[in-house]
Image (cartoon, rainbow, N blue to C red; front, side):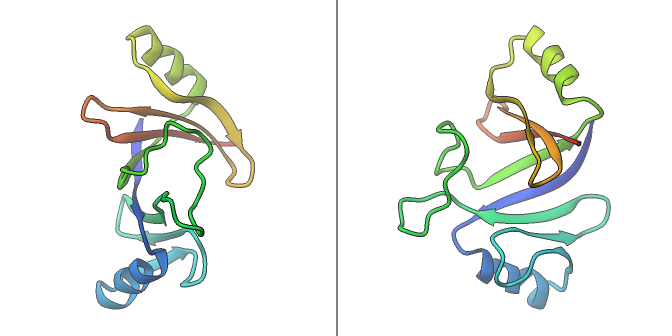
Length: 127
């Protein structure tokens, strides 16, 4: 299991995109000022930006009710086989927010869990 990127869940992706691109000077890998998702090269681990879920008319709806409006970050671990890691962690009594499922629009198979402090963790494998 390797940490592949750190995702910040932010209220204004455009504002943060401009900050990380223009002020911090990070190289853009995916996205633009106009997209709801962006990713920057930071070395071995990339930084991603995604909208924070909220109660505004323009809110982003997460795919599952257990994604909290209080989530501000997520750790994304790249694994060889999401289902295998899911089974291993379930055998250790880890509770998952969302079981393994495909996200063809992103080209990944993913599962979600939380650490003891409540940090959102994504297990991620390419399709």
